[in-house]
Length: 372
Ligand SMILES: Nc1ncnc2c1ncn2[C@@H]1O[C@H](COP(=O)(O)OP(=O)(O)O)[C@@H](O)[C@H]1O
Ligand SMILES: N[C@@H](CCC(=O)OP(=O)(O)O)C(=O)O
Image (cartoon, rainbow, N blue to C red; front, top):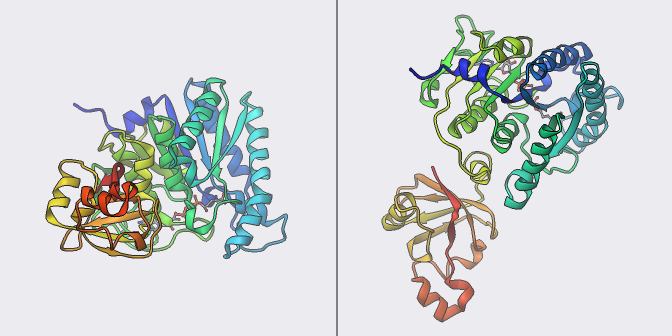
């Protein structure tokens, strides 16, 4: 029989643990040092048991509130970035001090979307993380909030954690929040029940995650489910529970919601493309091109495109849709939207003769394309 997801989490040698702002803050939204200490104790015990831990921690904005005299979490991006700039150092200082008391050194890793999407950058990010782990350092990861702009932000750390789990070749992902598990509806709803196991994402039909998360967190359960989907589709078992249950989760106890691994690993860049990016436009494909792209895994050629929708630039993610408008794939387009109308429907050879060799290229290369 296949090992249960909880047993896989318990056996995982390299674990990514993500903790949300809601689990690290006081009712007023400030950093709660007692909560940080409790988390550190549990993770230090895992480390001393010979496991490798990568911590993805939110809380930079929360930690910056008090020093800036802010009473509530700012809504505008610029003030959030300023708060994160002030708070990130304080957050890592907390971790560094607490882990040092257990004889563990931490290293700060701040990532942007590009670090896990551009091939050269994610190799660098992987190398750094691998070296830190080899040196016995516990990486503390957060989004590089101060430089990330709205268009290219993860926004919440749930999806970042799933991509980091993939990046560092983790054996399991543990998502910690302020609720013990995913419930069939918001936990305040009468009759809401714990979802104990999710064999595959189709089992979530009917689970209501529409209510927003806590006042300090971002994304609520929607982004946690999305993170679990990213990780499990890449072969990484995922457990969602409260920060208070982290030790139980790492020991394989019957806590939280366990999401079973459903797929195999694939390049990180393509994971991002499938799950995180916002498509900037659409290319409508004829039936032959749909078959070529989805079944033969071929590149998309100008001859198979019947219409172009949106104002995208070369390099942007676009959706590839079938003649009925259903999204079949997503890819990074090689041309600006304004270049395409003169090319579509034509054979690449003819285009090369007519417009020059640079126009004989594919519209979306198969290496920059993910079938959905
Ligand atoms: N079906 C559900 N099950 C559990 N929690 C839910 C559900 N729907 C909404 N939530 C909310 O999601 C919140 C956790 O998300 P969030 O505040 O973003 O946390 P974090 O800071 O840990 O990322 C919970 O506090 C809860 O209010
Ligand atoms: N990077 C931000 C975290 C964004 C956020 O709020 O994430 P989360 O609490 O995990 O939903 C911070 O450190 O404040």
